[in-house]
Amino acid sequence: MPASRLRSGLTALPLIAILRGIQPQEAEPVGRALADAGWHMFEVPLNSPQPLQSIATLHKAFPHLLVGAGTVLRPEQVREVHDAGGRLIVSPHVDATVVKAAAGLGMVCLPGVATPTEAFAALEAGATGLKLFPAEMIPPAAVKALRAVLPPATVLVPVGGIDASSIAAYVAAGASGFGIGSAVYKPGMNAEQVHSKALALRAACTGTMLA
Image 1 (spheres, rainbow, N blue to C red):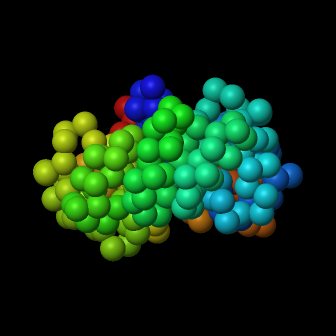
Image 2: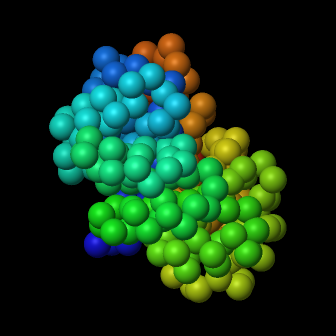
């Protein structure tokens, strides 16, 4: 089930690596650096170079991890990601056709929301959880307010500008996990640099989500 796959990933480490701009030849070494640091969820935005190839490479190298795509805008892209081995669909917005396509294939789907109206619409369409985006516009106080009105089990994942310094405040407000982009990977970074940043972000979760 999509929800159980997402929750098991969040329990292992509540961080999704957003590998925007990654090249296919970098996918396996960067994925290895992240996996060795304890990360279990990888997202390759579809506006990256040859994203489906990178997703296929990551899925083949790490079949036990949750791998998929970000910046998914159309339902036909959901099928393409599924065919490449991806099981995670992340969007910057709520499109019911995308959510329903992902749900129909048994995939984890995290549409982007910024308001209660969008949040409830996404859940009604069948979203597995909610990407709170952009997090720069959704401070911890807003997450706390959303948490108060949404179903208690709703997965809330702030994305956008999240780094080690901001994790604790969002956790205290009710965040379930985080999408981490440039704080863990930027184009041009080597695997060793990614591993170092991944370890630092993992450590930032200690004492909050991790025992």
